[in-house]
Length: 171
Image (cartoon, rainbow, N blue to C red; front, side):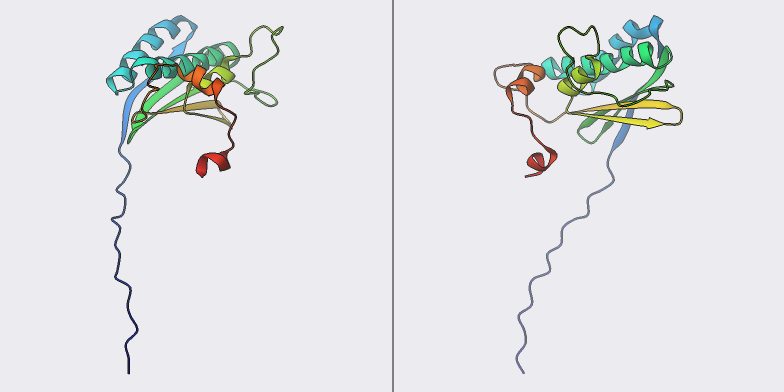
């Protein structure tokens, strides 16, 4: 009787639980938007997202905050956390947004309407979630991603890149 060759047992260590650290949690209103932006910028820099990438992320969140003030009942809540090497910021409001929320650049003759588009361009990801209490917009930024060697801001890099689909990004 001959024995079948046995493949060596390859063991991959199971990934540990993701390290999630709360960095900031604050309610805001129109009166506190500027103070919130300064606190956010300090927290983002302390987490290690600096330079153009840090500025872009803070601007993306600021657009979501001002949208919450303008369209979401005049106030909202911001949560910033770090999960492994990703910064995650959720901006929630109690607004009752009707219809779809366009994440596209409006026509040049339309005043306003660029906040979600800007947030989408400036952050690594944008997710909009509608629930009973209102809308939550979530943006992310990778801390380990290298900036462009030429120092080009993220919005300029993304505008120069062709649009990609999720399938293309997974390849």
